[in-house]
Length: 258
Ligand SMILES: [Zn+2]
Image (cartoon, rainbow, N blue to C red; front, side, top):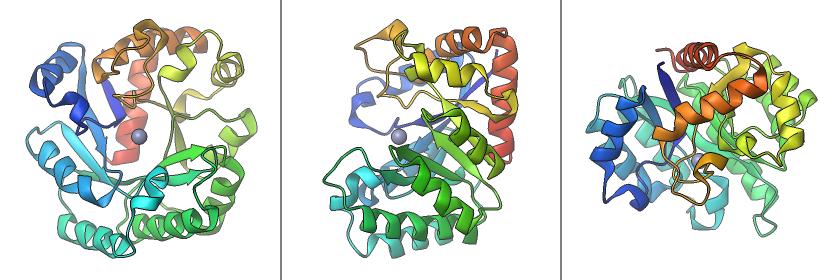
C-alpha cells in the first residue's frame, strides 16, 4: 500500500529530536512522498532545506492566515522572489498554506482576503496548485475561487464542509484533503459527508504534528499514522483500504503532476 501525505509540517521543532528515524518509519509503513507546507516567511528556508535533504519530500511555500499578524508587508514580494528562484525545481510542488480563517475572531478578514487573493494569483502566475486552509470560510473561499479560477486547482486541506461545498470545490478543480478529523466517532456530520464523496476527489493527509486521529489520541501526529487513517476512512467510504490508497495516491499525483 503506497500512500502520499499531502499535508505535513515536518519542519516544526516537534520533529527535531527524531526526524530521520520518523522518516524511516514512514517509509516502512508505505508513506514515501510527503508535502511540507511553509506557513510564514521565517520558516520557508527551513522547509526548503528539509525537503532538499530527502528526495521524497516536497515543499509548498505560503503565508498562512493564522499567522496574519506576523506577516510583514514585504513578505508577499519575498514569496514571489522565492517562487521565481525555485521555479522549475522538482521539489517545489505548490503555493501553500494559504486561505481564510474565520474561526479566530482577531484575524482581520479584509487583510486575509487581500493576502489570499495575492497568493492565489502567484499560484496562477507560476502554474502551481494551491493548498488551502479553510476554517468557517467556505462561502468566501468558493466565491474567491470562482472569480480567480486556478487552472491547476489544488487541495482544500482538512476538509470539513458540507456536501454542497464539496461539490463546489470539485467543480473548481480542487481535491478534498481528509485526515484524522473524521476518525473521531463524534464527527458524525463529517463522516456522513465523506461517505458520499466521489473517490476521484479524495486525497489523504495528516497535518502532522497536529490533528491526531482517534487511534493515536493526544499524541504527536505523524505521517506514519497515515495507513491507520486510510483504513478508518475506507471503512466510512465502504471500500477497502487498498482501493482508497490507490485512488488517493493517484489523485495526489494528478494534483502535483507526479
Ligand atoms: Zn497545515
